[in-house]
Image (cartoon, rainbow, N blue to C red; front, side, top):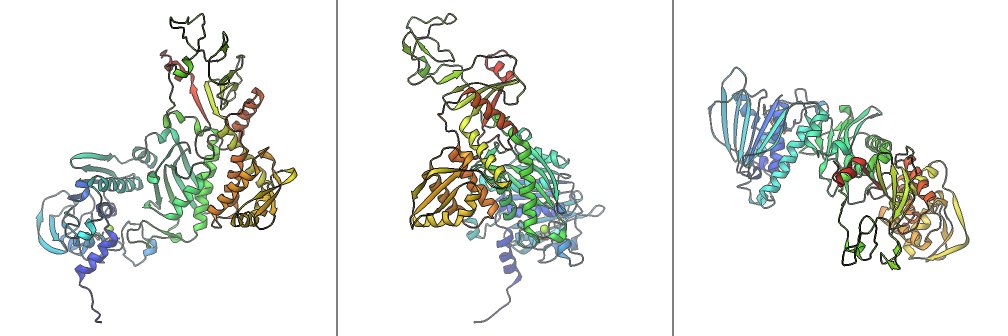
Length: 591
Ligand SMILES: Nc1ncnc2c1ncn2[C@@H]1O[C@H](COP(=O)(O)OP(=O)(O)OP(=O)(O)O)[C@@H](O)[C@H]1O
Ligand SMILES: [Mg+2]
């Protein structure tokens, strides 16, 4: 074996493997350099997703010719004047990006310091290919062509130009959010992809995030232990199937940090189904001594000195904001999940005849079904029981946000009249939420009341499930569920949580065992309790299909109004929707 020092072009190519994974990572490095150079405007041009061309123009400080040579050398940087990485505020500091990119592409670097002449240096896959004077306004222009053309191993892993362009756009969007004071533009194959003027942070975020977030977002600004969190997150009802619209920043540096992503997820836990994700732009501000940014070549991950404090800031801050939003969550659900309203009768409701003075039956003997179904002339309008019941309207409507119950539809939905419109509540979803919040409130103030079973229930289960439940028995007792081991493969249930009412005990135990198996011991006791409480709550809810009395319906509405997070069920679906008077008028063409 003989050990040798690697030649510098090989070192650069190895470094490129870490820093330049795909066009978007090269682009990110170039734009960061422009920002570090004090640019006020950064303009990007791309061709074929950046594979054919990445060009970045800036009006920053520019470089003199001898600086340009240095910039293309490895480990040459202007950004660490005193060797203190800890205090670095610039995006770059490793002095690696330019030589790495230049080793896997053709790179043309044009630059000009104000008041001097411009200069150009060309590099072809790490080797100097030419230099000379160049005409350009003060600032820097870098062109990267044929990225990875000579690195087939890397090219193989690239996706379509469309997908690579998507990643480029995402990278620029993140940097544009980090620096609202700078103008950005992006053009792809001659078409404009993004263009923003210098502005303040909220305006910039609004310009780059989903437009609807203005109506469905919550502004965040909180401080805890000297750490600050600002930004905007979506209400739980405004969610996505992918976690791609989550923009996270630490000291204005875009990051994809696991701790932050996990904390965001935790803040929405039990407000969203597992496969749904909130939209967010969140800025964490911490003293530089509290965070190490030098843990990842592309600097997208960071290490916090006190991760628990950061997690507490995110989970606590977001949770408080979401709680405050309370039942508002579903108020604008229509735009996010359009409800289908139709003025046409379905074949279902056409089956019977119901002559009414206003709408006499036509010659075929079929007629219009009124909203309230019943039995007319001995013929039943619907196959089954009447699907809706109504209360005679009493005026005036008291000013309850969710209104007063007027009836129940399909034994599943409560219809209520509010001052400003018509409210429809999913009784199962709403009740499940209320039970969970009741259990939570009770368990934080001591323990949940229990309802002793007249005869203890014996539930047969697999041994590992019994082991899990036995281990969790003390936690479960705090939630009002009293169980003990009963031989190797059975559990004895002595009491169930009172807020549940009558419940399917074996079903509850088997769901709990599954939940415990899934969450394992990774979570804190508090988090485990929360998970378990959500599983229990699901068992206690008023199922769809139960007929409710008007008093029961009103009680449910009033409790929803005063319960935090009652706007969505434990899976993030809305518990109610409102059709405002104006919407109703529009449906009838009155507006
Ligand atoms: N657009 C630019 N305008 C002015 N100077 C630039 C520009 N791009 C690069 N430079 C100079 O070139 C040097 C090298 O850039 P390079 O990106 O390789 O390293 P870096 O930014 O210092 O560190 P990192 O590798 O972490 O990005 C920078 O330190 C800077 O002085
Ligand atoms: Mg750099």
